[in-house]
Length: 350
Image (tube, rainbow, N blue to C red):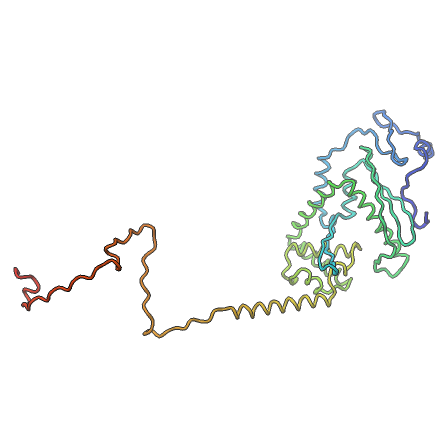
């Protein structure tokens, strides 16, 4: 075992009774408040015991909901990862170590530990979760590379930070896998609370301020961010702001690096140029597709439009004898003989 990476918790090879007897003269088995004795062990560690008040799951869920709605921005990490080889983008999302630690504390009656092995270029961190109430135990290994960059110039300081990052990730992983349903519930509640939080102007201002600070510290051009979102910063929606905030938070906390989230500045310029060219070509094609103006004929050449009958289902049908195509022309009446004005107006009896 490397002295620089001491064991934080290692399963004991000795008998649990010998282990307990060597810890300040404690008895081999600890009596609980009800007088019973613990009998289940996991790797030499006591894993279950009788308790006065069992775990209340409904009460645990209520407390987790309050935490998630209050600390939503600290509970979830989320950012896109560009696969340039396959030309696609995947969203990396999950719970943070803060969510895991609040979860395990509110869950209660459990124990977390780690043991570490130094294998040269990496540390293998074995994280353990032990449920003292049910006897359930889980151990998961996590491989942390020593070469991970943190931006620190001091090599020793960087090694310390990388090691702590590995321990945090190993701890988070074992808790989330042991309590998967609770963790998923907290993630969903955290997302909902995060979007609600960004609805206020004060929260938006603080989020933009944090984004500006991270961009300045890591020398991130704004064009690299807007190229991914597809819209200028003054047109960001609440979801856009929440997304960029979470991306910058991941960069700030060392969970990811800039080049894994955003394209290079040159690639971003290409994206913007292609977008501009596509927009210009769309305008020109729409102008070409406009119909030509109809030639207006002089008034003398224009034919009067036929009067259209009023629409409506209540109109009676036109009798057959009145239709234009069915009417027979009447014979011309004979020309009457010349008469004076009185006879022509009133007839012969007038």
